[in-house]
Length: 147
Image 1 (cartoon, rainbow, N blue to C red):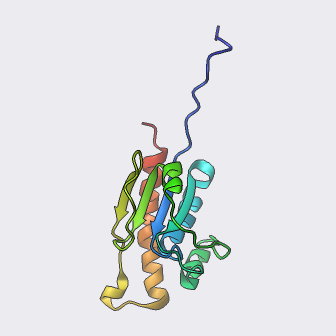
Image 2: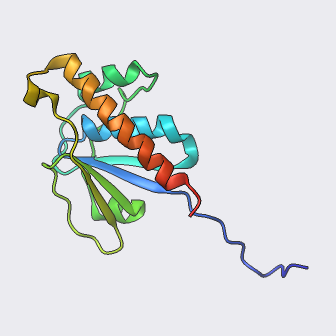
Image 3: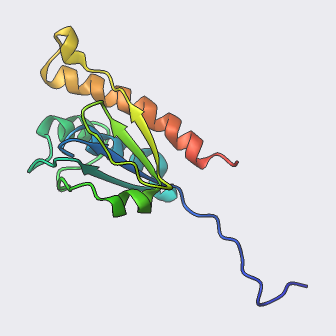
C-alpha cells in the first residue's frame, strides 16, 4: 500500500541554455539542433551577452536544410535568471563571457572556425553547423542517459 500523502518523485526535465555574443548565429544553431535531436525531452533556450537585432540569415538557411526553422527567433539578452532556470549554460566560442552564478554549471565549447582556414560564406556555416550538431548529440546523450 502506498501512502496517499507521499509525494511522488518526478524526474526533472533536463534544461540547457546556449549562449554566444549576439544570439543570432551559433547559440541559435545549437538551440535549434537540440530541439531537433531531443524534441520535448530537454528544455532548450538561447541568449546573447550583447544580442544583435536579427538571426543570422546563413544560420537559418543551413538549419532549414535539416528541417529546422529558426527564422522567427529573436536574439535575447542573457540574464542570471535565465542561467538559474537552465542550470546548465553552454557558451559557444571564447568571445562571450558569462557571470559565475551559484548552482549553475557552465561549459565552454570552442567551436570550429572555418574562416581561420579561409572558408567563408555558406560553406563556412555548414561546417560550423555540423561541428555544433555533433556536440549537441553528445550533450543530448549525457543529459538523457540514466544516472
